[in-house]
Image 1 (tube, rainbow, N blue to C red):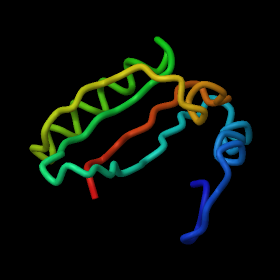
Image 2 (cartoon, helix red, strand yellow):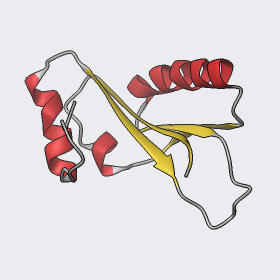
Image 3 (tube, one colour):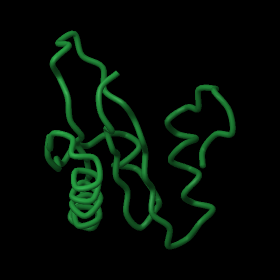
Image 4 (cartoon, rainbow, N blue to C red):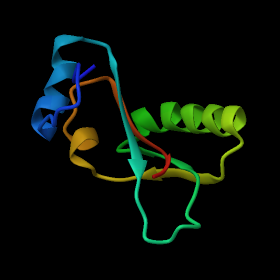
Length: 97
């Protein structure tokens, strides 16, 4: 966990947590925002092939458990993913607020 309360943690600090846990995985959990009130669904991001398998498995399980719209698995260079020391890193957008 990168935080124990409702406070902002800088992106670099979030990434550095994984350096304390060799062989770990990094899962960043977020919720989307959109002006379109009809927007819905879950999507999972990865940065490289090493993380793609985990992203796909997590996405599949979340869709199966929730019945939410499947927005897919996507590759992106988000900072918390691209420069992460963890063995695998994914970012999950768990829906829309």
